[in-house]
Picture: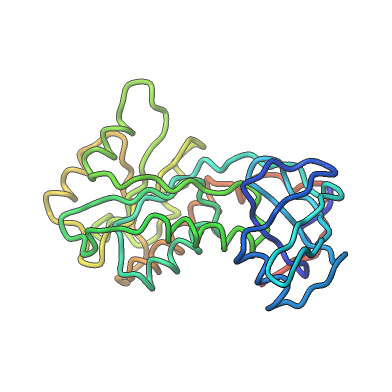
Length: 263
């Protein structure tokens, strides 16, 4: 199966995808292709829906404001959904947009908002987060679109991961953990469903920290000698988790080229 084509326009659609199907694009997508990118009839783009892999399609323009895409072939089969859950206390909008996009790029399969005592944003626009998730998938060649879940309280999150028979764990970035190097802690863990928990801008309260450290489902790790902002901590923690116990450890696809692409 071919590697992701970084130079082609790529769009997410809700429709089922199969050879020969014709997909009606929503107005914003049609405007983007026809008016912004100035594509003509017959131009090829990439299409995916998070279920059926990635396909090529040819544009069939119906008017100045509407177009269809005829599916012409499959490029990549659907990939498995990542098992990494990213749990976060909501941030102010611009930083939240950035954080959602980076979580997708780093391989999170679920984005789980969590309310804590010091969370500053109490009302969350989940549709905006989902839009950022889809945009990141479109830009970075992601096939398995991460799920954006409804907000939960911190205690409910830990309770769900502590239920009998649950084999996963929550990795909690705690500045009071021993040492500075998270690798010393992560190296002791075996592969299992994992959630990363990043706190709010004001940090966790003392009783929340005590609660987390007292749960058998939670593993505390440090994240270096400096205090990081929540969005910075998220990227740093996702990177070390993926490099030690995550999908960076997976064998490469033999069909992938050796070329490294950076957007």
